[in-house]
Amino acid sequence: MTSPSSAADRAQDSRAFEIAARIGYVVLGLLHLLIGVIAISIATGGGGENADQSGALEQVSAAPGGVLLLWVIVVGLVALAVWQITEAVVERDPDAKKRWAHRAKFVGTAIAYGAIAGTAATVALGGQSDSAESSQSLSARLLAAPAGVALLVVVGLVVAAVGVAFVVRGITRAFEKNLATPGGTAGRGIRVFGTVGYIAKGIAVGVAGILFVVAALTHDPGAASGLDGALRSLAALPFGQVVLWLVGAGLIVYGVFCFARARYARM
Image (tube, rainbow, N blue to C red; front, side, top):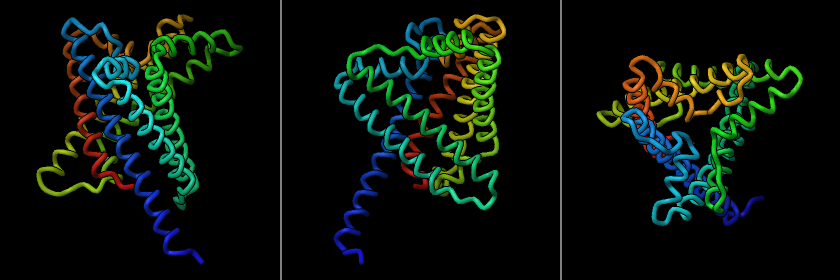
């Protein structure tokens, strides 16, 4: 029989872990705000920093108390990653295909959170991390492998599909089912921010996936330059600066949505 004290301890631990995971959503919001600001800076002719997670984390490290904040980012993202793994384990959708699709999504999200946490830890310890170089290095290794072109195309298509999923999630407002959205003006605002933010992020991620495919078809690993390269490639399009400005603004909106998500996420 479980003693009242042990049950209370477990509830307290669970509450502490939930708080850490919610901090993770705040962290995601901060990173997307910084990436969006860098993207707008690129659109307006500035933007020497990388418009991706590594560039945002470098900005954090340069701020007063930046190293401490980086470790807070690591803890929050690791908590979010563990939360996603837990969701994958307890997933019980009666439809087997949906159940495994949900589990794959949870695990993929956990890996993404873990990768950003690793980047934050590297920067906090004084190391250098460049997401664009990592993408190019991955592309080079795949291209050097047997059937490497096909493998890199698959990677690109998967990343592009994730981008499309973000856009669809924004348009259909599927994100609402994971939120205890309040009523009134606040709820409407959160829904609008979520829609705009998901679409903007989906465009950026989708373009990054297309760049992987281009790298495969041209046998040029340098073409796969991650999120930073995706955003900079938007600037090269006709009316690209306007498009990049809008995407950057959308990423800022997504960041604000993440702050709301920290408060209203169902956990």
